[in-house]
Image (cartoon, rainbow, N blue to C red; front, side, top):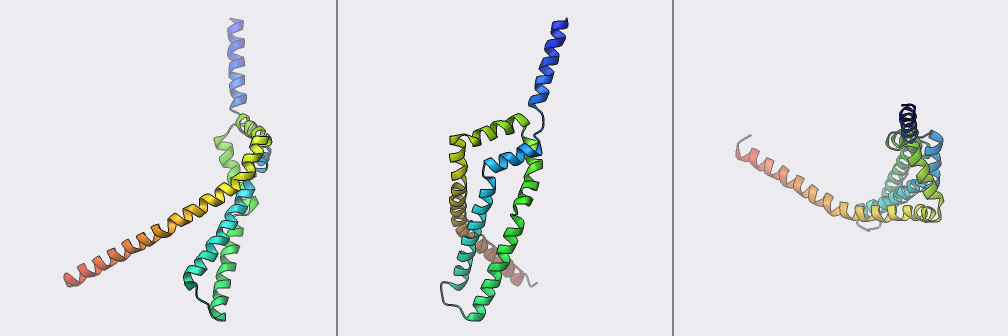
Amino acid sequence: MKKAVAFLSALLLSGASVAAPPSDESINKLIEVSNATQAIKGVQQQVDTMLKNTIHDATKGQTVSPDEQKIFDAFDARVREIVLRQLDENKFKAMYLPVYREVYTQDEIDQMIAFYQSPTGKMFASKAPIIIQKSMSLMQQQMGPMMQEMQQASNDMQAQLKALHQNSGK
């Protein structure tokens, strides 16, 4: 009987330690060794590209007047400030701490830290921002035509509603 109690106690204790929530320190360590903050920089670079494309699309590649350029420069500065404010590293960490705490156990965080400190993990972490940047670029390419189609669908709907109202005398 004593052996059964000891076995159950050991089993329960080992289960409790595996399921222990991760500490903030270990989550911050994981964020550091996984280069997660580098992903933020990748997003910031992607926003820069998106801004350039937006301004280029707005001007249709034509030369703009000094007054128009001031407006574009102000837009660029405003969007960059928004992005920098929203993608602040401290804000990023504060957002992810409770998520990581809820999803991962301390043991899982420890395993990921060990992976990211390995040569393969370091290689993966160093290339992750490139993957994110390229993926976002591809996504942006997909979003342009999709947004145009959605705009056309909206225009068609508005035209149909207008025609309906004109035909019904409203």
